[in-house]
Length: 64
Image 1 (cartoon, rainbow, N blue to C red):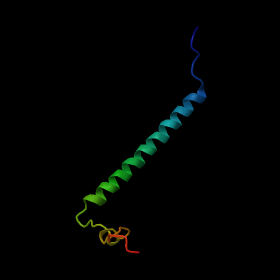
Image 2 (image 1 turned 30 degrees about the vertical axis):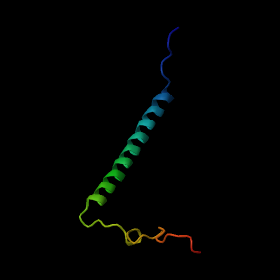
Image 3 (image 1 turned 45 degrees about the vertical axis):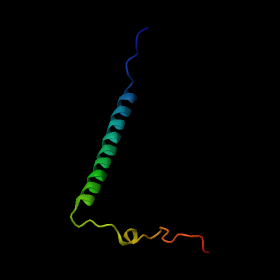
Image 4 (image 1 turned 180 degrees about the vertical axis):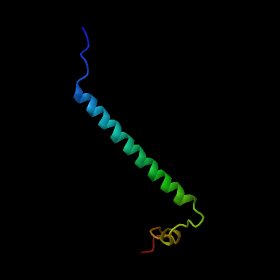
């Protein structure tokens, strides 16, 4: 049983899928680069809302 040649539509879909994959990969690399740059900058500080313990329980005990 011989294999049939690939249809033209499959070739077009393959090229579109490769294009979408490359764009997705470029977006992921861009986000990683921006994150790396933000974290490794010399003036990076934890926001005051997180540094002051906002949202954490400070006291212990069951006195309600």
